[in-house]
Length: 262
Figure 1: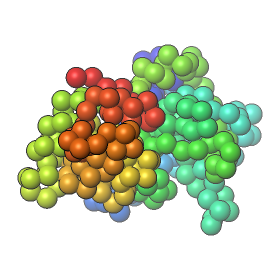
Figure 2: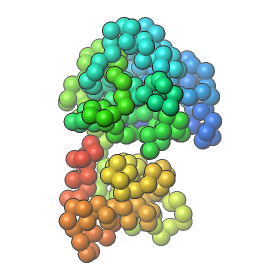
Figure 3: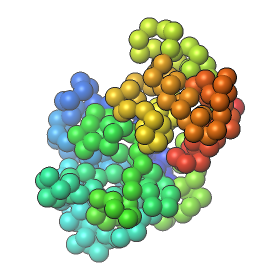
């Protein structure tokens, strides 16, 4: 490992779906990797763990479990920027607390939005969640992100690097899940990694409640949500039955930053 942003983003993508155990305990293995106390909010700990595992030198003051402290350290070091790059650390301001209270890794910049990988969150973007998720947040024109910290990477991530970290879902896996999971026992999963990516996109489209998008099961609620997406793409009848098809899946991926393979 050479301490590049690409390595950190690849590592972060591999963590998606990891959860604290038991849920609500804040107990996870990233604390040991970061050298932090366990059992406390861990969004910043997740980032420190990723930087340390991939041998990225830490900006002075950013070896912390506190989101506000990390934000202040990047600013003091002159490494807090208004516009994001892949590999940056985003800082989310929470008005109810009057401070930055959540941090995340920027995986990809898509217009006014950033695609992120975040620890200690849920698919609804909570700052006190249970796991590592890929999300989409607005950074410009009405967002609540207060700057992007830039770690001391060996090489600044570029657009090709960001694309290489882009997730890819399998159409055949999703079709199998959409046919297998609904009639099986409650919560049955056949291809949860692929399903979670599609469910996150459906949540972002406002078609699926985050409540039903956490277990990786392509159940009846997800089938209904996908059918709504198909109709939004002007399909109807048997072509809007909630079973993913290539054209609608690619369209969803274009909007939400994932690729499609057979």
